[in-house]
Image (tube, rainbow, N blue to C red; front, side, top):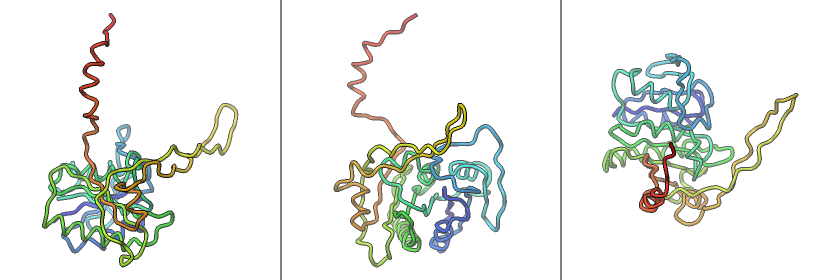
Length: 252
C-alpha cells in the first residue's frame, strides 16, 4: 500500500510527524505538505503563480502552496506512482460541523477522493492538543479495517479524536455533521486613513451538537467518524425548485 500524507499545519507540524510514525508500518509513505501553516485554506488551488516544490528527504516534498495544491501536484505529475489513499492531519484542533467548509485538512483528503481507498482527514480535538499519539493509533486502526473491509469508491472519512490518552477513549461512533452558531465578531486591530485591519473572530460554539453529531461524540469521549460526500446537491429541494423555476422569465 502506498499512502500519501499531507496536512494544513505545515510540514514541520508535530501532528504530521506522529502520523508518519503511526502509519509507516502499513506500506510505502510519501509526504507532500505545505511549507507553512495553511489552516483555513479550504479547497483553494493556486492558479496565479507557479508552485515551488522542495525535496526534503526521501519521499518527502514541501510545497509553497495550499493543502489542496500539495495533493493535486502529488497526484498529477510529481510522484512516479499513484498512491492508494490520502491521509491528511493530524490537525491541531477539531474539524467539527461546518468547520469542514473551511478546513484545509479536510480539503486535502477530499482531493484524494478518486483513489482506491477513502481519503481520511484526522483532527485532534482540543484547544491545545497533546495526545497526537492517540490520534495516530486511531488512524492506524482505521487503515487496518479499511484493508479488511473496503468502503465504496469516492468515500471520505472525517475523523475527530478527543484529546486524551488512548486508554481513556470510550470507543468509536459514526456521526453526522453538526453545525456551529455564528462566529464571534471580527477584531479590529488597527486603522490608518482609508484602511482598517481585522482579525477573524473566534468560531461559534455548537448550535446543533445533540446526539448523533460529531460534536456530541467527541464531547462524550468517542472518536467521531463522519462520512462525507462531494455531492453538495440538496436533493430534497429539486422537485420544489422545478416548479418554482417555471415562474422565472428571461428578459431580452
